[in-house]
Length: 386
Image (cartoon, rainbow, N blue to C red; front, top):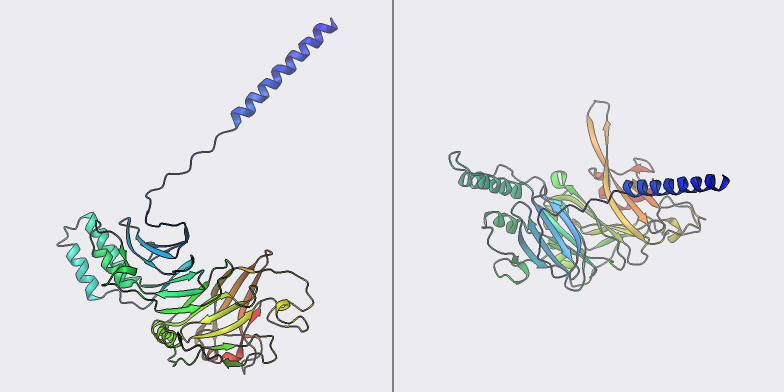
């Protein structure tokens, strides 16, 4: 009797185990396959390292491992142009800087749209082409490339983009590095440190309130923890590249009040240098944790001294502005914008810096407004940790 009971129990347990195993197997639903691409761009001969959409997603710029940049028309799904931007290194980063203040109602745009859409009999294809042409004219940009060859280049390909809108889709990609009718050279080139994999950060400020200033020699600020903190010293650039840099800065200054570029310092990868290429100058030098600058004194340019924290290299940088509205006794309101920088380090830390006036009648520790005349005096500014 006991043997029969134990046998039944064993059978029940076996059936229960099989049932639960089957239930567990049925509950595991295989993951759905990845979505198929809508279309594929083919034009690079090496792995792609950087991507940038621009002109309201009308175009896409891509940079590869051997220094080539390709631009694609998203609407036509066709290549537009390519050029060898960095001949001895990969394209680490790409960014498009909008050029504001472009005429959106120019006669050329109106005429082009009229030719594509006649007497209301426009087809869907011609309407799309007209919209892309308007977008190309209204969304002019500088394409900025950061290469592992220790160079940052500013490119102006707006005329090529506008011509591509009128070009039939059957015409292939234009090689601007081997084209007599479209000789392409950078508007400005900035030598930087690209020894690590930290990408550049760029912030373009519109030229609506640009201050006319004749660029001098390449200037830089001494590190904020230096004994000569805040003083501007002249670093005469080499004979090669000085004149092209000044010329390029003059071109950029016509469209922007400031274009700030932040990259790791060439001396220490944990420190950041910030350039204003419209001058051109190094506006802030060696911004970062105080441990790497001077461990014997407190500083408002980093953490308090005595910290044993190991930051490691800067891995990611972001420049942005914060806006604050101020008023006076007469009730007049004014918007002030202050430059900020976020830096992410190798150990996972993130630090927020703020452009600050440290020696001014406005008072120590006052945020510096980028649209104010206070920013013209470089010796009164530092990047303070927030």
